[in-house]
Length: 135
Image (cartoon, rainbow, N blue to C red; front, top):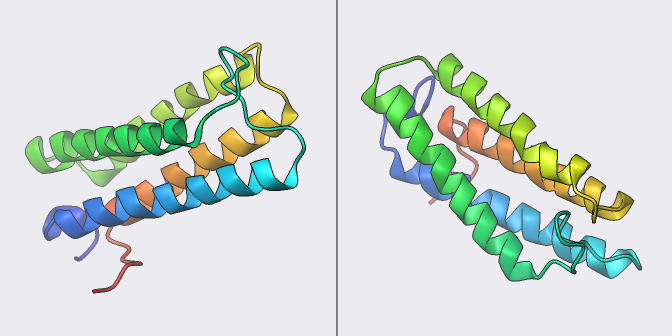
């Protein structure tokens, strides 16, 4: 892969873009819940967040980002910069429930913010051609 994943096969970038955020987010989730006496909660409801919610939302939204990447960069032929701007706007919107949700406490806000930022960074790096997973 040259400058970004648009010049090579997309499947390795997709696998990396899904697997690494999943590992990081589950690690943040389990470490936070193990180390802090205040578990991560759903910012909208205040109920304790199950790990399945982290797993499903990470995979779903990461695949959504890959689909937007495919549409913007691969299908429409726009630059990676356009995708990066779209991804940044999505990141900002993803923080709204974290910071505005009534059920979010400090532990939840920090943990979810780290999950969102790490996923954003890994997805952009993966789709930009950075290969961390080797065969």
